[in-house]
Image: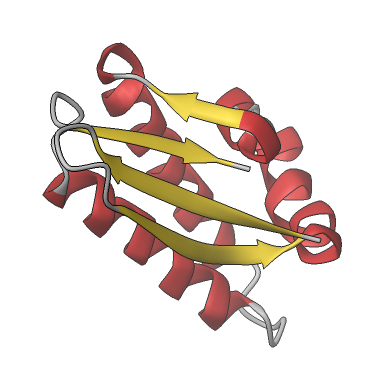
Length: 105
């Protein structure tokens, strides 16, 4: 199993599924970092629906997650994790939540 980001256009129904990580990678890195840093929304990535009200909080948690990766650069997975974080941020910034539904699972 894996965790992905689903972006769906409310008007057209077109959707895009973006892979994030496998469940084992989520538990080994993403969740571990989220617990260490107190990032509640990142901990919930397995079933998170992003609303406009929580957009900035989520982007802030992603920024803190990226700071966590900077302290763990010796691990070979970290560059891929940083790339995924940057991709999530880019997709959220380029898809207004007034027009798109964004969820993780």
